[in-house]
Image (cartoon, rainbow, N blue to C red; front, side):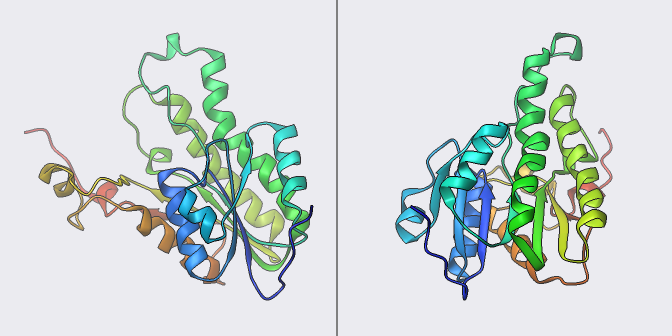
Length: 238
């Protein structure tokens, strides 16, 4: 059964809508009056579903699953796609021990997923619509043994400016590069102190950036660094 379409509401799909950042984005958009769908393999928050977020089971790195999810959703127009899904692991172990299967599991969940979702979304998107890719500060800096994740996020940054050029001016495409985002309010003092703003980031910080980008009509092909200034802080061993 096709979902009834209300043309006075804006429509958004959030991938990875069941995760920490995805839940925050879904909640903020819902509160702002959007009709929201969460594409995820995990169940979206029950309170959000009760409030109107549509949960669609989808393996966003799988071509058939993405096609089936769009068919199940049944929307005929789309104003915003947030490519937020992706797994972080494996993050430990030397590159010579990283299997091709694990490499593909990570890169497919981020980069291939963004390609598949964008390819299906674009035919539904009209003038003034937006695609936002969830990058990371890991596209620009790394800890040891995070090659698959860093490569995935770096690829998303490049995909962002490529899509912005190809899809503009009808569709604007930007990325957000979050730094340390935590749902735990009881972080250590030293965790907060690493950030010039004095605290670790919250999911709401990312959600507010998404809302900003939907209205930033002169911004496309850009990466919004959202890290509390952490990547600008010089660090010396003591």
